[in-house]
Length: 473
Picture 1 (tube, helix red, strand yellow):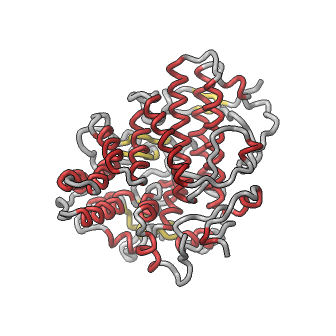
Picture 2 (cartoon, helix red, strand yellow):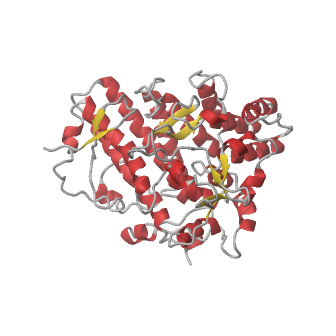
């Protein structure tokens, strides 16, 4: 058997075998095909630690590689750019064949045939299918050490929760696929979002108990216990479980694992970032993150992905994030602004994708505390940690309503052009229509526009799927 190898610097400089657990011609149909000669079959994957670990790493590698397809990817750059357009953070400036498809995100006029929406759905289920295969394979694995088996079980459950987190937030009710029985899964109806959230939280609780505090490698490229806790804190926040969100955030903050204070703004998106809880490593030779390659521009050239005036005007006077994380390509065109959190495009690898970072945990805890009686002062303290790093004075918000708006504004300034935070924040706080409808063209915002459409190709393949209300006509 001829094997395909991929060198991955950063994962202890090991050479791992790129493994696909189960291959299939279409994610939405979950159809298995004959295994090509350079792909290991599942009965061989779980016979030793190295090949089983390679199976899990192949999921992360695919997430990075998929960014370079014609339809984008489920995560990373596509989530930052396209959900950023939905949140009125970013606009596409080029007049080409891509413009109408991108404009649908900015205008909130998405159609079910939008290929980028299709990728969010299909890629999400592709990764879910692979981690389901890993979870199943580990249950009957032989020849593996217990510690590696436990680590991989935790990683797989975390990744399943991670994928469902974005699917349920983007689409609402989605099919809940928990195994590899493709003949049954290809005809699953949409599961109520409440049940999907329950599965996300249960998977994260399992991952938190299975994973250890220590990262499996010298870098933060594979999840540890705090990674699971970071997403769990977010999941609790999104479900209004304030005390549990506070406790998970405190677990991370108080661990000392990520420093006693927030690092300088210039260090946040470096590959050695002290506040990084989980990162993903770019896998294309001589390239850093896609954000660095796509968001940045040359002097006197209009950015392809331009930051909106509404975002620029949201920054307080003296906010150092505006100077550290935003670039302006022309002094004569002050609106030519672009996200510059990542500053490296091609060349030596100096930046990794930051998926979870410590700052979010302070803001999760601030919001969770603001919702609880008697915790206004504690909420202010957490908010001020973030404001201090940005060079701002302590917050003047002194009651619950003011604090919640202050946290929302702080999250806007902190997480712009990053993983769709602003879009998801406005949705979960039920403020999307009030904030975004006035910025949309007439008649494009409809009740239900906070959800993306279920891709039409998925509905054609599965007659039990239904469309979201805003896209029925």
